[in-house]
Image: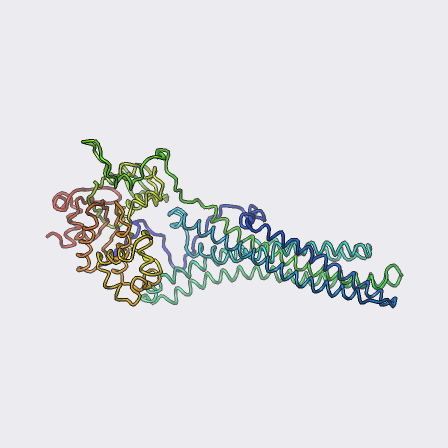
Length: 619
């Protein structure tokens, strides 16, 4: 039977009604601005310069069109030839269309590159977060930041930043031309526009906070969906589909409500925008018509002014809309920056490690002659180790034990005794609260994590199998392994016939999480993956819990064969798999309560005797 002990720490309840914890904010909203975009744009400055030049040319050509139209009207009134002016006007229109297309294409490339850069940085950070960070966070929310939030960054460059800048330039140029045509008419128009613009800008600034909240709610919903899908078989077997659907619907409702708040802001912006342009148009017609009647300006000037008004207003409307999208993108950028500012698991060694010192693996495997009588340190040593997960609970108390070289030590005891935690401390998924864990006589904190883990082979209790092929899984820790080596290691765990019966052999897909394999096959594949890497020290956490009696015997033989020149630390609930171990350590409530061989412990340890009798190993 599969053990329910996964990490020997009380798990937080994850009922359908429980709200998933949000990522703790590490930065303020005001700390995330356009300056935060700079790292994502590195490598694109030349392209952005080209886009800026094209935008300036397009703006100048667009601003020239009302002037050309005014001159055409004036020449028509004066009965002059207008062919040259019409050709210039058509040329300006065509040039604007072509250059705008080129500019937009380049801008989209920059935006896609920025999204790629953000995703690369996020994935790199997520894969290197300390293990404790994964304990505190929901996978779905982290995935939402890689997918949905990075997608929103595209709008920051395309519809946000450059649209805002280029349209503001267009608005400025149009305003200057309108002022030059008629100052009093421009003043009256600007007064009508100014009130509406200020109102829209004020509302747009509120969109940023609302957008961030909406993305948080989407992250919560994604977490709920991911939770349900990952346990879909258990949910269906429990008849809990409807309850889970209701729970996910609650998160979806929260996301809906957040989206409605954004829609409400947008709904206020659009009427203000349209009303403002209508007021400005009526002002120009009224005041401009009066000035034409008084002879202050000509009809052609009024027509040009009206054209510049539209040349001003449409870019102004786009700029205001782009500003709103920019705030949405900056809200997403805030969530991305939160992850990027999380601490990264360090791979540096402590001060005691010198540049010339041999690595642990080199020392363990070194065949250099040693002085007579030199005592080699044990493969593993726990020296008065205390540990707690940071929530006030102490998991291990004053644990001291050694794993001599070339021997097998088994950790046994009730669930929650701290057995799996000891393996996690060796791997430095966590660091001890006090005491020392040593590998080959060296404090694990004085070894770079990459070097240390290269020395260790670790098979988790859940025996995870990655989506992909059998070959992909075997090559995870041994990418240089040949096909013959892979087949040989599969043979050693009694899995070769199962795998090679498939038409694709080593290239057969194992499914998401290895769902196309049985529990025992997944466990044997996980063991094969570790055996193939041939580490000098192996950490096995319930490595045979899913195996039937026949495969358990074969696996014990395989472990015995590969452990001939290696050191093993094995966690076991089924004592039958470890009764022949060189040393058995009995743990209870995070403390070592007994230590010895099977025969010794049945006489000296009441707890071990109770465990053995329950499993029918003794009468």
